[in-house]
Image 1 (cartoon, rainbow, N blue to C red):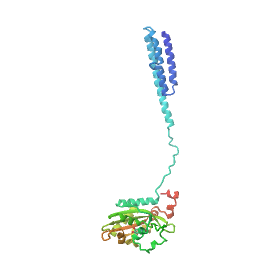
Image 2: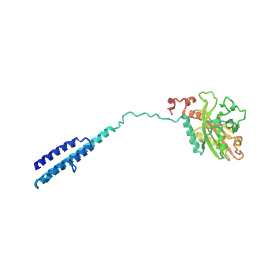
Image 3: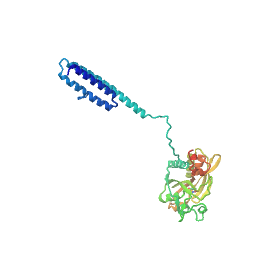
Image 4: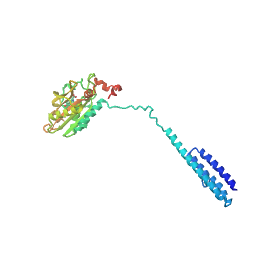
Length: 331
Ligand code: DAH
């Protein structure tokens, strides 16, 4: 091959390579083009293979042209590579763009029911005072609901009007005081215990009465527990729940406490009864095998719905069980 032939071929190869480089549609294809023309066995090398037959004078000339062609192609490739990379990033950015002005997906949010909320608050207060949280059962025997709590056999609270009896002699507990017996039977003093749960009564349902309602029971048994401890605990608890509030104790009667009291708080200008309480009756301690000559204790029971209604300004107890989202979403 003559010098001019080689030059012509170099120019053809360079031209083709330049076209292929600009036509490469991706980085992989571009690399194949590079190998095809500039690789060891590539088209450029093939053309230069014919150089051996040239004169010593012409050889450096072809070498110089070839080197230049190589350099030009390399810079074309580099440029194309940059363009392709930029295009790739741009298209990725375009496809992954997030339009922050699009409307969001609505996530319905649950809320804590006012009953659960107040039970949680009260539990927190008593746990802070070192109380243990206990549970007992809703289906109960006469013994745990009444007899062990010192209800005489003819006590009016056992009347069919109040208590829901089940076939077979069981009943639905009418208060959480059954927890006192069940807990004390299995634990030794000292004890400080809190229990919350559902209670059942055959009540006519109206704005302030429900057949199913919640109570919280708390009691403490130890040596030397006095009425003063009860008063201090009740006062502290009510202030923790309601803030600075006026509290009054009224003498009352419960079969399972002696002496007994009811507690009122001054709420929006009126006295409002919030719990029953008293010193645990010696007969109750005897029923669980606890010596009343050695130990004494106090107990109290509160109506949860009443407190929730006061705290959340709810006028009708039935709203608490209506499952009406317009009502529940307020809390
Ligand atoms: N069990 C009573 C009721 O349901 C409330 C009660 C009063 C509980 C006095 C007590 C207590 O523990 O000492 O009405």
